[in-house]
Length: 99
Image (cartoon, rainbow, N blue to C red; front, side, top):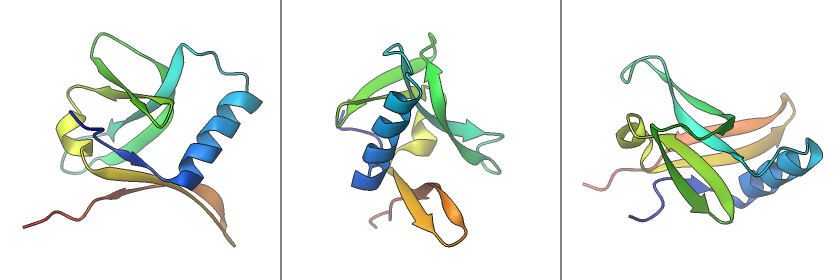
């Protein structure tokens, strides 16, 4: 399977910077998933260790963890990091579906 999610250049730089600055061990990866129900949930991003429910991907050299139960809901999303006047942070957006 191709990578289920995309990490923009800005997100990759910020993730690597955060991992290094906080001396986060290699056993951790970027968790991408859902918080709440599938229909009314919001995307979840954070650093975590893998569990038996996770599928692990190596995307641009970054370990990404996705709970197998969330996989169908996150396929095609793009994770970005934006800096703006109101602060900076990660954004997650769904890819355009081709019809």
